[in-house]
Length: 159
Image (tube, rainbow, N blue to C red; front, side, top):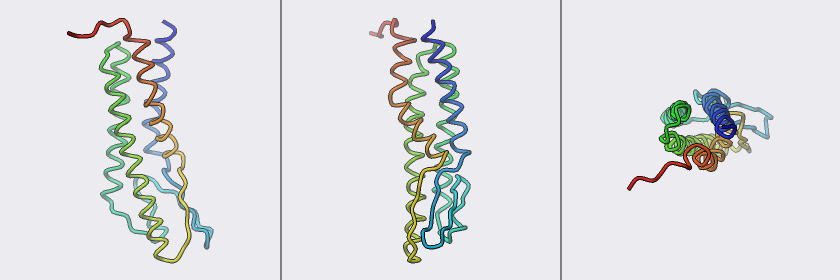
């Protein structure tokens, strides 16, 4: 019983983090020549650096982050009802977070490329939102298996 409660609370915390991640700054871009620092959010931030990024990249990244948050919440609700489908939802959320991170890296690289074209040297660092998404991805690679063992190890496989 204690294991189940622990994993339920832990997955609830991960679901809350999945909501907070897309709302937080995703990357921090530092231009070394000017000392300028700019935070990138899913709704923009690149224009202050003079860079151009397709709004489609932002839209797709935001969409994947929103789907991941939805799947995490839905999985948490299923886990609360001890439905084994929760594990599949958590695995799908991990996939969506991975795709979200790919879009984030693509956006940051596009900005760095635009800055290089202006003969400026810059670096990109993950900020809170990107770091939370990375943590969620790594956690969701392992935790659903442990949750499955705690909740559903006594279920018999279907024939």
